[in-house]
Length: 215
Ligand code: G3P
Image (tube, rainbow, N blue to C red):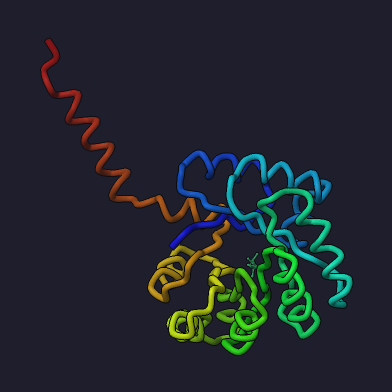
């Protein structure tokens, strides 16, 4: 499973990219708004930092509008992936993007059927929002566990990005479900590397090292 960072914060992206484990970045209008900076400038800055798929989301409601945005975003940089919401107009836009060689991320996916339609339309990625499903009292990964083997069985090329990850156990669940990618917030990536026993162990080794006679 590959890891993307789910943020538009360039300092955070730079920091996590330096760990050597990052394959891409996902943004959405909320994450872009949170940074309070120009959309295109932010996107290009992210593309400069991470050499991998960088998702930028459309905000149009019609397929025509989504396509217009898709053509524009994808002209900014070769790594831009166009995020398109999981609605009927979105399917039309994804299908046309596929014809034009524009890579897409079908987003706000909350069911196996939406993901199946994404695969049929030729989406490069589909993003189930597991945390938001958990928020409603259901298991956000239930359909993802069915989805991944199903895509494999039918040899669909669409890759699953487990999104709306809220805590480290979501990442574990994403890996168990066979998601191709988990897009993870900065806070959760930091939680993933942390373990109190590691800190205690490092501390003890350093203290014991002081007792080793130095010539
Ligand atoms: O990748 C999607 C993500 O940004 C949404 O997360 O926590 O707002 O549901 P959240």
